Length: 229
Length: 229
Image 1 (cartoon, rainbow over the protein chains, first blue to last red):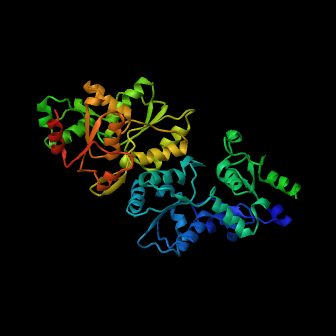
Image 2 (cartoon, rainbow over the protein chains, first blue to last red):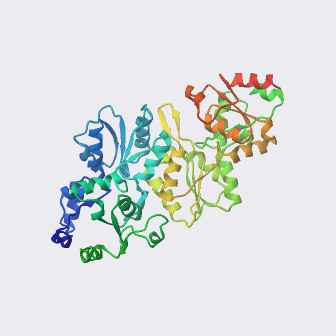
C-alpha cells in the first residue's frame, strides 16, 4: 500500500464488511500496520444509508450489532423497508421471522441487502453469508432484493466517483472471483485476482469470470501495476 | 369424512406436516373427532425415508425434534446428504451453518427438502417455512434441492399408488392454491379449493393455478363430490 500511495496513484478500499463499522474495520487494519483511513473506505452500510435518505426509506435492521452505529442518523420508526446484512449470531429464528413479517406486511416489500455473498470462512469454520438469508426472504416474500456492496455495479461506481477516476483507468485487486473480479469487470474496470484469502484453485476454471491476470499476493499485484505505469 | 368413508370412496390424507410424526399428527386429528389412522396418511418424512433407503443415503437431519423418530431406522452415520424440514426453533444460526458445512463438504451435494412452503401462520404470527431455508442452502451451495411433499408430482403419485387409484379418478381437496391445487392438477387430478384455512381471496386471481371449483368448506366439498357420483 505504501508503494501505491508513494506512486501517486489513487487508492480506495472496497469492502463488503458488514460486521463492523468502518471505524472499527479501519482500526483493525491499522493495527496490522496498514496505512488506511475511514475516508478511503467504500462499504455497504454507508452506501445503503445514502439510498435510504434519497428514497425516504425507514429500515427495519437485520444486521450485526456492531454495524448498528452506521445507521445512527437514519429514522427507523414505522419501517417501510428491511435492510439485511451479515447479522451472524443475530440470524436467529425469531429475528428472521420478525424481518419476514415486516416485509410481508408491506404493500410493496422493499428488501435491501448489504452484499450477496454465499459464505465465508472464519477460524471456526465456514459460515453462511448474507446472500443465503437474502434468498430466504426473497423467496418467502416473492421479492427481489436490491443489493448494495460488491459485486453490484453501483457500488463500484460509487468508489470510482469518490476517487474521480473513470473505470478504464482503474484496476481492482481482490481475492473473490465473483464479487471482486466479476463485479469490477462488469463495471468496465480491469481486475487482478490474488491467490490468497478466499481464492481457490477451481476459480481459474470459473465458467463466467476470468481475471485480467493472477498474482500470488498483494505485493506482486503492486509490482504488476507499477511496472505498467 | 364419515360421509366419504360411508360412500365407499377411497380416501387419503396428504400432509406437508413435518413438525411431528404421523402418530402425533393423527392423534391430534383424532382428538378433534376425525376418523383417521396412521396408515391413511401420506407425509414427507416417510416418503423421504423410502428415497434414502433406495439410494443408500445417510442423512444429516435439520428437522423439528418431534420429527426425528420418523428417521429412527435410517443410518445417519457419516452423512452423504442433508434432509431439511420445517425445523422451527431448530433453525438456529449454528444448526444452519452445520447443515451448510455438511453439504458444501460433499463432492456432489444432495439436499432433500420436506416441502417448499414459503411461510405459514401460527397463533403468534407468520413464520418462515422450510422453503425459505431450503433456498438459503441451495444458494450457498449452488445446488437444487429435491423436494419431497406437496406440490411435488412424485408425492401425489405415491398417495395415488397407495390407494390404487389413477389420477383421473381422484380429486384433491385443499386450502393451498399452489401446494394442494396446483400440485394435484399437475399430476392429472382434479382439485377443489376450500375457502378456509390458508385460503385468501387473492388466490382466485392466481396467475397460474385455477381450481376445478371452489367450495366454502370441507362439508361442501363432500356434497359436491357425492352429488357427482
